[in-house]
Image 1 (cartoon, rainbow, N blue to C red):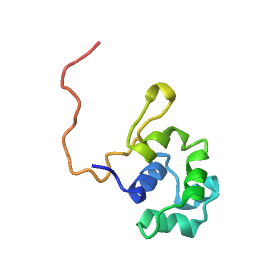
Image 2: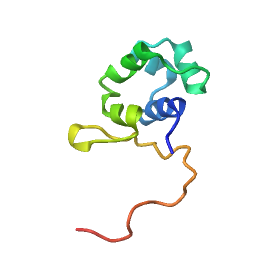
Image 3: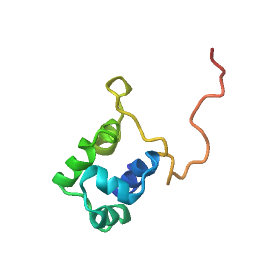
Length: 99
């Protein structure tokens, strides 16, 4: 199941431990627009999406934000707090010990 744009923006911000004010400042997106995006009242247009994903701090989330994919070899990752909002409470990791 795909995560909503509102949730993805919130996850990215919280993963970087930013306030909405600081995220708005970093990306150049107005605070009021960012709040509406996070609340799901509006979705960012192409220009706002570019501002968000062009910012060096958020570049690593591009594939996840746009395609629900990641490519670690290309530096593309899922935010650290991506588990927020998932219904699942168990880990997908194997219990096997390695190393």
